[in-house]
Image (cartoon, rainbow, N blue to C red; front, top):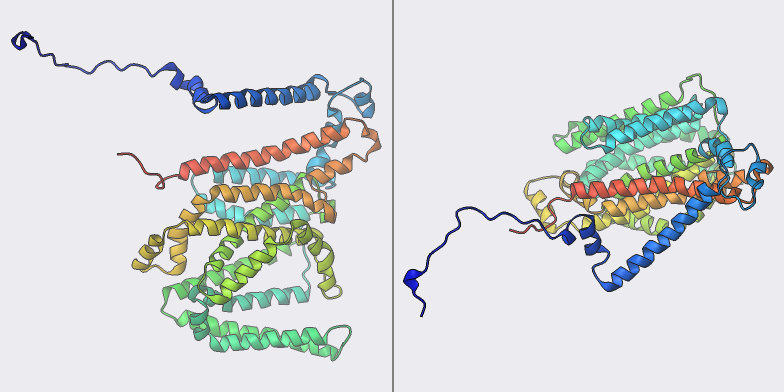
Length: 504
């Protein structure tokens, strides 16, 4: 037996020295063993994938650099060497067309200003640590588009009387729509029943005017001008009645809606005034635009317009108001059921057939509107997925706090929903950016279109001209798409709070 009285108790008086982790669990080696070589099958696939990437990479390097031609004045330099690679002198000679298209050479400083100012404003908006985010967002959404429009087109627009009357009519009609959005269809109708009756009468007169002014009928030509004044007068009376009612209301949300509408109208009027100012710039038609300029204009316009429209459509599809929900569902399903190429054909070829004689819109403007509406339908379904992921308790908590519908959405629901669907939103943006190449079918030369058009130049007709041009176009598209993808991953990680269970 062991003598317990002779045993000694030992107690550690200080912590033992910490040992380093095993070398095969940390660093690059640990990451490789954990992610790429954790099983025999994954190891085989990793080796095959690395070999394939090395083969492709070496082929590109060998074609673009080792066998590439870097100097020359014409196709002779690219065909002088047998089995030559990329024809880089062709890219140097045509690169200005890849960026500006057929924009006048002496006016390209205007495009450069738009690119530089947009890049600086977007960079300051994308960096979270920089201040004045609200002012920067206001500049990007209001000032920058107007500045870009004036610089690229030259401004100094001359609006026709019918256009101005149409804008005035839309502003007056929006005075009736704002209460409906702020209070809902049922309550808005009760508040503004008389104003809505006047607006309905104006709509009826407008429809009758369209019928009478058709070339096949052509009755009472002077009736058209009289009916236009009647429509404007009825809409003005309806707007005044609605605004007076909302201004006299003690409801805070009613006054907020009124102030928002007045501010929006003032912004529209200011934009129209700026567009009519002569800044001394040479007018440049959109037919002269092309290359990266058209790609960026179509993509940025579609991205900026599709997100707010998609949010409104997603909210409308989940609305309890039957009219709003039906309109949203029909809009989303119709636009999602039609290919983008069909939308562009309709906007370019079919739409002018339905417009009155002498009324037409710029081809690029029609493409921008069609692309924005098409992208908004897909964005609505992406946002709707985020709204469905929000627990019902969030809505109940907002109701318990007494928040209105719009405050609930803007302060509680939408921030969480948009954070959840960041990957889907950016995926839609990347898809839209790549779909801009479809505008070539309606005669707009985007980046890919201007590259293909440059192949017709006999001065640079060489065996490697096409492959070099397509390689440069693919590289430029990849830079933009990869940048959006990496930034979305960064924002997703930065905002990933409160959705993961932490161990205790």
